Amino acid sequence: MEDKVTSPEKAEEAKLKARYPHLGQKPGGQKYFDSGDYNMAKAKMKNKQLPTATPDKTEVTGDRIPTPQDLPHWKPSLVASKLAG
Amino acid sequence: EIDWSDIISTVEFNHSGELLATGDKGGRVVIFQQEQENKIQSHSRGEYNVYSTFQSHEPEFDYLKSLEIEEKINKIRWLPQKNAAQFLLSTNDKTIKLWKISERDKRPEGYNLKEEDGRYRDPTTVTTLRVPVFRPMDLMVEASPRRIFANAHTYHINSISINSDYETYLSADDLRINLWHLEITDRSFNIVDIKPANMEELTEVITAAEFHPNSCNTFVYSSSKGTIRLCDMRASALCDRHSKLFEEPEDPSNRSFFSEIISSISDVKFSHSGRYMMTRDYLSVKIWDLNMENRPVETYQVHEYLRSKLCSLYENDCIFDKFECCWNGSDSVVMTGSYNNFFRMFDRNTKRDITLEASRENNKPRTVLKPRKVCASGKRKKDEISVDSLDFNKKILHTAWHPKENIIAVATTNNLYIFQDKVN
Image (tube, rainbow over all chains, first blue to last red):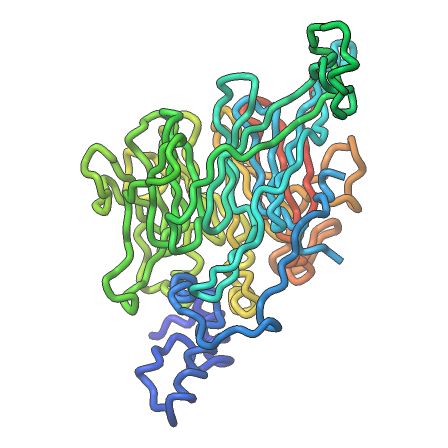
């Protein structure tokens, strides 16, 4: 006889799998149209902050030369913290 | 609207509890000082007022990797006080700084060659000599950077911890832990390295690390897979092999996609006694006896009602929130934050727990906080809040407990609350 009681966690997992069928799959395990398709799928996965994502991010050297518009504008915090106000 | 740079990222009392430091996303440190107790009005402890504020870290740009280095202060740790000045370590993702905070309440007056405003006097007009004297002035608190410990971390620093020898400290990033001497900035020793030869094989990262409060050779580090490793620096120079591995066995039939994510330990703290350590994972706080590796001795559910909301919490990224935890001075109570500006305390002796809220709307100053209750399911009682009404943007990630008194500091997104228990 099947046990019909599902843990809340498993129920949530089922919900997630229903919304994102390809979640958790390594890019190599699927068929992709071309390298662009592969990279798009990889980027979508990396969008989720998997704990391993952070080290990967810092390993990449920029993939294109930044233009002045791309550079983050520095916000020199000359304004005092409001806690100190 | 909240100014991004005002978001508080760390809170820490110093060893006496007289000073309380906060760090924020804008790279600033604000230090509060407790008022000396008023002898006449001894019914309440001194209030905390702003003592000093300074810019600790600035945003930087790594030109080689085209990446921005955030100025956000990840951690502050105080050194024990040795002389009139106070010292603290503050760190962002890449650089640790030792700051000296000193008071100046006197200044020299009566120079022979300078006027009081600093202008130089014409030497030919000087006819008599006088000896400059120190005269009182309004208290000025100055912060100056004494050491900069840079360029030792490829990945983001998540922890710093000062050794009980008060001479060395460790800094930990996702994959490595380094040991520093407080006097030496051009060298640090790598004591843990979990980086795999092939980054594709990476499955686990370091989430927190701390030195033992009494044994200067012992430290622990926690991982994203819910394990804690205790290392002994006497065993070898590189502590890649742990002395103890703390891990609670998991029922494999209960495993889900979320299991590993919610088991990731966001904070680890030794008890003051050094006998126990506390870990915080997404849904619970666990107390471990250092003598027992196979399971925690106590487990406290922080917000178990979130287990049936994991799907949405994954979608809005809240499942990755890193909550901290802390002990009270006598190790009898532990505290941690939750959502909706709620924070929780667990009394280890009485096994009672309480949920309180840090918010201005619901609490007038100097009134006793009302306990809160979250209704997990079914009919909501009056004064209860249903899980679906919780505001997941109001998270309390950082809390601190005074080392000696029942005074706590609770940081909401951009506000700092200081609570104390009633003094009879």
